[in-house]
Length: 169
Image 1 (tube, one colour):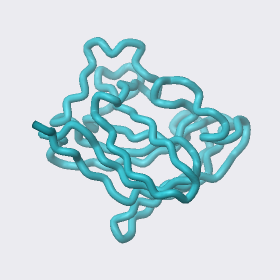
Image 2 (tube, helix red, strand yellow):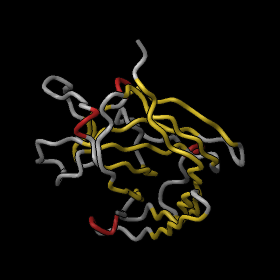
Image 3 (tube, one colour):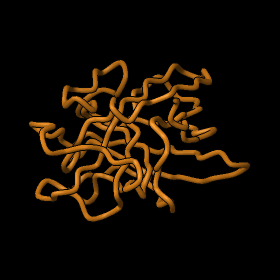
């Protein structure tokens, strides 16, 4: 899902080989400003309290997305959940993202209030990654970790592994 749904001109490619997701393309901030890839999964995330991500990036800050897979957007009752994923050019990293660190989001914008919104791991059915003008807290993704506004630029993220972290105790 790219910004073309809102009139943008970004273009992405995503391929998988040897269990690695390659997410790359051109993000065009002239009329848009986001690119994402998402995948459905069965069984939810019940019995876990975090998502472990192993990845290699290009210095940009991406977001990890979780959702129920139901229609979302600004007028939906079903938020997607976002957590920032900073990268260092060419460096492989592994991070554990506790579910309580994810921010509820509607149509890409964080919810003004977290009241009434709770990430229920067992209800999650979709995972994704996104590069966006905005960080998960709604603040601007700074030029050094995003790209220059009013231009088009290349991006590349490799997701090397994704696993759930079982609840402790």
